[in-house]
Length: 240
Image (cartoon, rainbow, N blue to C red; front, side):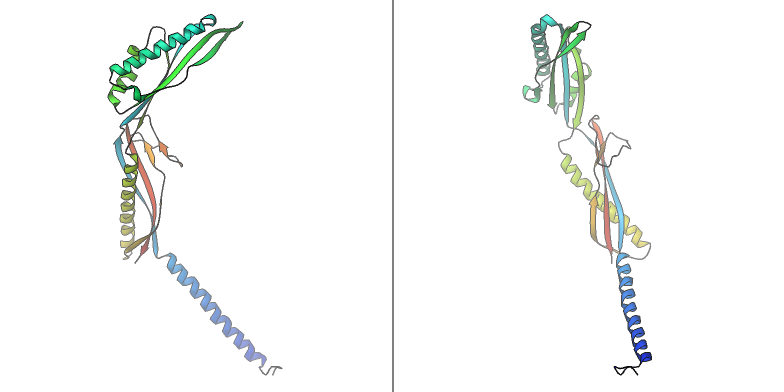
């Protein structure tokens, strides 16, 4: 018998029993944690929708090239060119309020002996909901251009003013799709779906129709009048 009145075999048995109980508690906790992890189902819902832009932005730049000593004349010419373009916009029913002019810029053109000529440029853009009129002018700009003027750049970009509402609707549809997918999975194991535990929406992919283009940060294609928008939703549902 030991000094404390408990023999060594009894003390060893007591320690062993305590260890078994402790192990049971630990293992039991792991078991219930594992059961808790299996009480949810994770799915990815998806929704997409075609739509058409209702705003167009036409950005264009015109230029004149003049000899070094005729730079002042170049400014006058480019001013006349822009006035002609603005008159063409007015004839098409596009108001001045839709037009933004950028400052005139000048680029030197060099030859063997230094500056040979100057290129005088002016950029402007037009934002309108009259897509048909703007497209007609942009696709056939000859009537807007004066003799000797160079259309240096021209670009149409298409936008939709109701995009925020479309995004909200699409997220709701993606959530519904996620729930249906979760219900299909749960029914295969005779379970039922409860409430949504968590949800994380992916980025919106706005592309031209029938495009497979995607990007981790999202896509917003402005080159097409007709578009397709899609989004995914990562959702976790509880199992009842």
